[in-house]
Image 1 (spheres, one colour):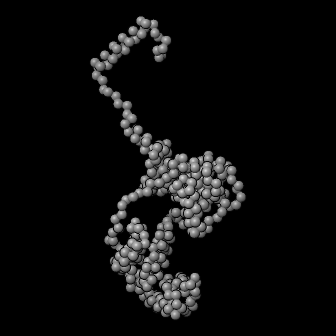
Image 2 (cartoon, one colour; image 1 turned 90 degrees about the vertical axis):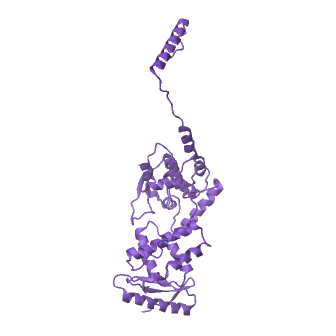
Image 3 (cartoon, one colour; image 1 turned 135 degrees about the vertical axis):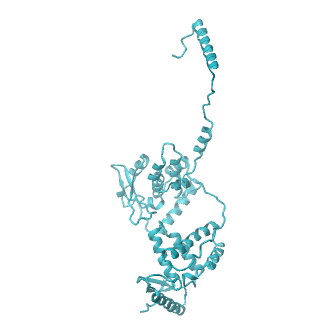
Length: 378
């Protein structure tokens, strides 16, 4: 049964059953209804061929690009901490190649063309990140779907880009400014939460009052950037300044910041507000720099072990600490001063020791003979 065309946001779409029996929606690229109807018939015809030849394994000659991207995004959801980059790359591919029908059509020639077209839109580093997603797609097609084909993205090297690691964190004085001179309630609360534990913005924005136990002074952090479907919250002890600040707040409502952040767009808007406020307040920074700041100051504190940083900042790989933990100016000064702060001792001979003993005895006799004993150390 052919589903009728629906017009949504100026585009025609229809529902259909895919190869595996899932009910999905296809959005036509054509804006004209007649062209959309033709596109619908063509799509359903191709899908019918795919179903006819489907025997438990997918065929590179009949696997539709639309169906492949659905399978790949489902794979990303189950096996990656986040699939936002992959989803974004697929949207760009669909925009640049609106006539793409089969996965096999996205071959090496089109991938090279993709890189060329993207040069006028984004930086080389961004293109390299896009290519990592595309390579992941083709690896999934060959290894997981077991398609009888070559990996079309294999062997394509990244564009050479200068290694420019942006080292940024908030100094102690900047942290004091953020916590004392911010008069916007939700932003000030976010700064306290993010700087206290190195929280990501979404983790801080979704903390509820029920996550805080003022009797034990502990807080539950709900991680969101994880491979687990139902990750367990992490219980951490709150620092004294955070306890004092939270006790000063009006605890009405559900969320500590006083509002609920539901959508990704709301989160982006909140991130932009923070960036704009920090630029006005201290001249630079973003919400994520709070995480860098927490790890940086923890790394530069000789009393804090690496395993403690990994626990409180919820880090599973110690290499993350190397990327996030920057040397502070204070730590660099300490290192510079301590390198040569060594108490060098000259190795003395027996004769030299005897000579020094004789000199000290002579000095003692001289002092005693003069009667000057009151100022001598005991």
